[in-house]
Length: 104
Image (cartoon, rainbow, N blue to C red; front, side):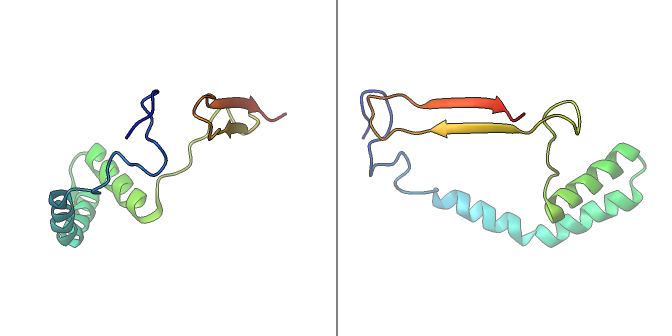
């Protein structure tokens, strides 16, 4: 159930039934091949003829093992950090306000 602005009312969801069972099944099947897929990436990283393929395999392994690296916003290490302040109102008549500012 939605309000006049198209937002879901409190206590209602657009996905009340959760993820479809078919997607869960596909995920489980894919996870069964996880060790083999990792072994294939290791093999590509070590023996692929093209450097681009070796690099892509290495990056895929690293991102799955350690997570993707943080992304620097700005030109360099001297760039001040970015602060994002979001204020949320429960009253549907008021609008969401957000403010972005650089810390000096």
